[in-house]
Image: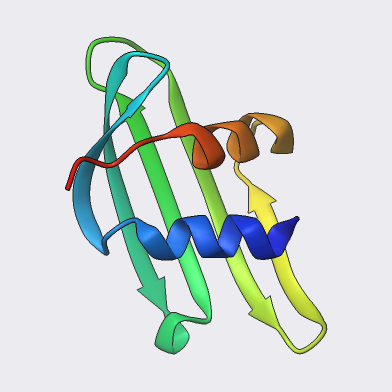
Length: 86
């Protein structure tokens, strides 16, 4: 399942972008580290207080998803549901 998270993160542009999640606009920032082997992602509801934050590390044994102070299920749901306008 982490492979799906990585694939979804790869579709979100590096830097700032906006997406729709559950009918709400989110400002999203994705930063790459270590040549793309580390990904930092933060999204905030532009009209509220909700946010999503995570780090994803590509290790020799596979990807390691580290949500920041929230359940992993929330991170996965956001990434698999958010839409990024073209």
